[in-house]
Image (cartoon, rainbow, N blue to C red; front, side, top):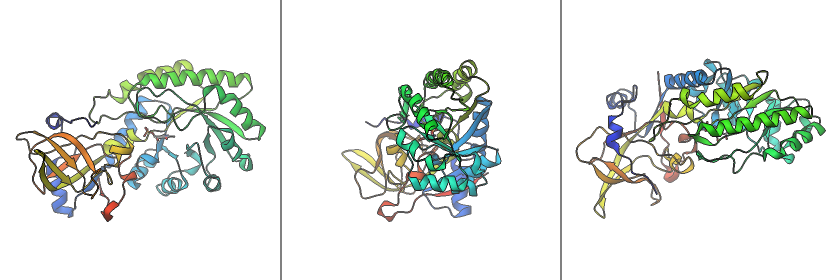
Length: 387
Ligand SMILES: Cc1ncc(COP(=O)(O)O)c(C=O)c1O
């Protein structure tokens, strides 16, 4: 069931920096911008990187390109001196073109085609993630060129997107996998986990860090030297729910890393959503209106097959901003395609809207445009990059 969003509450929240309606009107007038479009604030990318870096001092940030591969975001990441977590060769090329140093990248996808591995190794990537014996076998031909991180599963009690269902070995199997790596003459480099995306409970991280600490001791007993612990992504963003500041959220993580992990072991993280989500605002227009079963329906020029693909794949509720504030009615907000499934919100409080009205949807930078399609041959929302 979709949750009703009280747009009045949204209106009481402070306006987004630089993304108020006046600024949007100017963009439409000055730049001839046609909705739907996405406003990308470079300064927000910088701010998010700086905030996470303060919240996790000493932890190397590898931006997860999959959340949003827009060139401007990748450039901000390299300009700030951080590196990348890539899931494919195309992401490797995009990150390198934005100035990234390939040798520092982590290829974090636990399952890769042989071609994918060959291309990445030939391009200079040496750090890869594995979670099963067959995957380790794929690296036998590159034994002298690669180092492997073993990904283990974590419990997924609070993350919105479960990433331990499909990936990660049982912690009890880590030693067996390390043995296999050694038998094939490959370098074991360390451990990694992912708590799941939009994880709102930092205890999931601290539990995983404790598991990692126990595993590191066991591995040491068998002469496996852990050089890196990669604590993945998952850091949460305030969409419609209240979320503590990232500094507060990471307090227990900082403590666990300090208390449980030997300072000689390097620590990395792979944030996607936290860096990209709040940097992008979607601007969409009402293109149709109707009353169905006494309920107002409004049709937008963007929908589930476009930028709102995150409603499906990312299970996300995006806040709605409108500049009309008369009476509020339970309404339906639908997308532009011919499919009845293309409904963004079935039950949302909205003021009466007119065709041509503009709605803003902040924090749509992660897992939205990257999974959007052009179904019905409709164009995808284009980006306008500012500051
Ligand atoms: C291996 C890996 N690392 C990092 C990320 C980024 O996670 P998030 O956007 O939650 O920070 C993902 C997301 O799917 C992932 O699969």
